[in-house]
Length: 323
Image 1 (cartoon, rainbow, N blue to C red):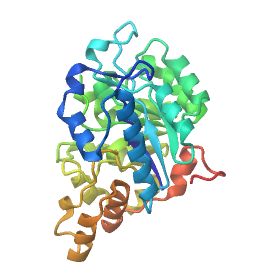
Image 2 (image 1 turned 135 degrees about the horizontal axis):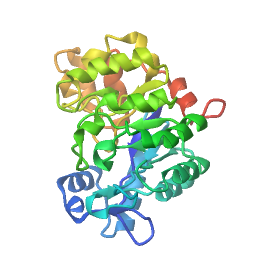
Image 3 (image 1 turned 120 degrees about the vertical axis):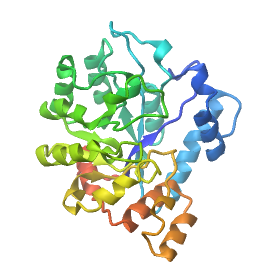
């Protein structure tokens, strides 16, 4: 399978065009990732190389995942379309992500990020697509843009015309500080879908606050109305999102629009499904350390199937090898 939702951690140096606010750099999430992945080095360049090496090692050790889309993350922009560094907590540049993909094309695919609020959004969108981006990732709550704003129509039309999917975060956001949480609600996808964009709702349109509420109703409505709507399954085994698994597994007719994802380096979890699986299977899942494989095995154990050919087609890989 191809994992469509893998993050590239990038500590800023003088060359890579990335950014972390001082507060974010000293935060718990960064310290946790360093510890969990065993990152080595005292400089930004060394830490970045250590992260890429660990990602490639985990991919290489996976039995089920052959390749991953690694994601850039654009910043926050002000009303004039200029970068608002004061409100940007993390930025991972498109050129840096492309550079890493070019070094490891047998394992990695280019997932660009373009905030539609930036002044040159359409030009940047054209540039990264010409540079090989297979999807565009946005995080509206943290990038602080309203995806329903009609002034983004030219942006969406580029995506529709180029047949490049928009991977959009869904749910409340806690990893990168959110400016407006409601910008991550699934209702906001309708405008892009109406414009003909192939939209991938991240995290199976789960809410990230344990209970799904209206999110699930909207998910079903979008699935019924829009054949250009898909979801990825990234982060759905996290305790705060796992309840979505018990809902979507009852909808096998929708599996053909599910894409595999992990949200790497975030962990995959088996504990939320304790009591719903045979003890032997639960023990096997607990013992599986590879994030990609644990995510795949948990989804399979819970009765959710993914067709890899759907991902290959959406990313424009049909007809050439994805491995």
